[in-house]
Amino acid sequence: MDLLGWLSLAGICALGAMSPGPSLLIVMRCSTSGLRQGLASAIAHGAGVAVYAALTAFGLAVLITSSPLLFSILQWAGAAMLVYLGWKAFRAPAPGSGTTQLEAPHMSVRRSIVQGFGVAFFNPKIAVFFTALFSQFVSEQQALTTKLGMAAMVSGVDTLWYCIVALAVHASRKRQLVSKHLGHRIQQLFGLLLIGLAARLVFTI
Image 1 (cartoon, rainbow, N blue to C red):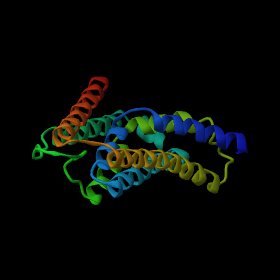
Image 2: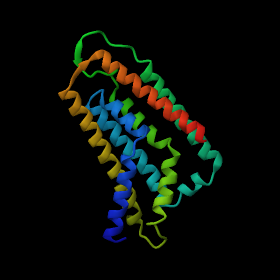
Image 3: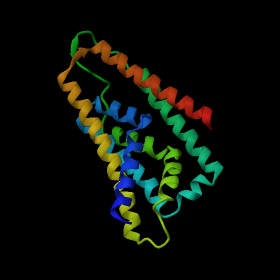
């Protein structure tokens, strides 16, 4: 594949990563617990994307998109995960009164990794996206290293974008002072948005 092909693939993947959705909400939510949590969720999300990218590059994603049962299972699993995460965020206990930095219920690095990877892995639309995209770039004559390089680049672009998001959220928390009450309301808003996204997904199944 020539340089123009690589640049085109990178640009399309960047636009896909930047589109708003549950992944953005999850990374932002993890980032409110700390920079390490935010970066961990971003890297884990990139790993989840890499799984689908690798499967697609080797032609295995066709098995997912052509199997209505497997596709439906992944859709329902993804919706259930979003509802669970949204409910946990919405039901998070309110902090005490006072004024401090934007606070959110503490989330461990391990939990951030699980959420970042899960929100990508249980999203079958990623498989559909890469099947449509890679069909323009993958050919039978391509070397194994080229296909692996495509998967790695897609994962790298996704990881880089969400690391930038995590850094932006962390920098914002460092600069801005808001009440704990407002921070709690923002956390609840994240929860409602996640549940709303899950409902939208269910209605499209």
